[in-house]
Image 1 (cartoon, rainbow, N blue to C red):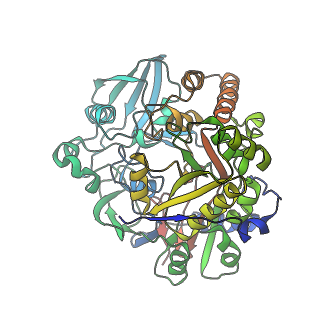
Image 2 (cartoon, rainbow, N blue to C red; image 1 turned 30 degrees about the vertical axis):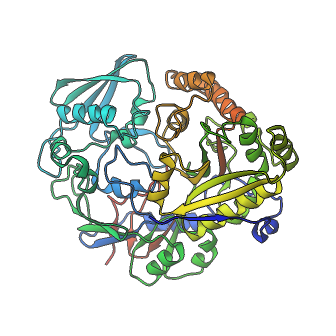
Image 3 (cartoon, one colour; image 1 turned 90 degrees about the horizontal axis):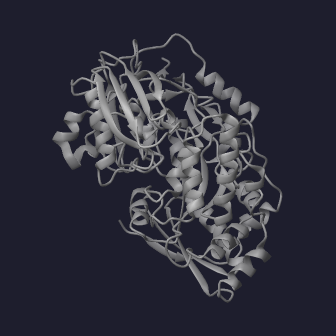
Length: 527
């Protein structure tokens, strides 16, 4: 894929116009938008049939749930795969799915009771042997992106066709919540064996929809699973998911009636959407945030002073006002202020302080303008604006920013190969915050690009966060964890963003969730 490398200049009008005023974290989206979203989701008598057209803004990295790494993959995966454990949309509390119940007979054993009568799309049975095969693949596949999620797993024991025991190396109380994410998606062992490396292009799950085709960069098509285990579902005959990277074009296609849903709408389009009679607006706050991942394993950003300088250099309030308008809020950690694990001290670690940033750059041995860092990002209009704003902040403290752009998939692969000093991309929320920090920072995680150990105390605290169960104890552990991450400045959180979705007035029962991952299995189309 061709990439563009460009150097960015100094201050930008967008940043200057934002001023220093901060955007407050909204406990919910605007009342008008929320009312419209509730109206769109209101249950009526479902109408069967029809094909939903839901626009997604990026080509998937793969349709193999255990080797992919893009947050946007979930919109595709959730149509074709069921998870062992699901979650409530508003609270993310775990609820039964392919596992009907789970118990802890001892701190190192999680027993799953499995739903009977479920079959994969290829007709093979879903059972304990299939679960065992999936976990063994997750642990051994060279490109597995879920190893860090299940790092505590030692072995899987089949107790009965509908009962399986997960044996752990050490206690991990977060494991049920881990199974609500990628590690919980179950694939057909037969398809995995037969299709090998092509499985990511030919997936087989147990979900409400079966895979039909993937026209690369154009669309993904799925059709109704006639043997789906949820009685009466799905309502739709199929789903076509066009891939349109430009937010304006995607929204225009919904207003014109060509598509029914556009995901991740540009927040600057909200005022116009509210005035439109053609679409219904859904806005829901989520744990998703815009951030910059840092490769802290190599120069120059293996120097803690430079990582801290970048964090001091960015005015998150101004950034949020420009890119999010009236919604969202500045992100000072990966935990929003409304979450139980939020820590005020950690969030106050890097106020906007360009003078302190300049001093740290000098301490690291760089004259003004002598330090250059490279950022990678997926090429689209919104990301170009965001990287321009970041560039203007860094320029003011004597750091020059160059950038590498391309498709989301191409730049992600380059990042994994060590290209760039930091990467600007979204981080989708995880059901348990221990998963977030394990995935971002543990040396076994694919998101820790250089596999570096930034601080043994931090690594030990992440491990401890997954063994505690009492709420007050976990809150104390997370306060320490968040403060350590901020002390070492291992990421650059920017702002939280709500799930903003444009819906045709034909769409019924679209229910957003706190994780910010769109799902369509219960959606139906009015006549």
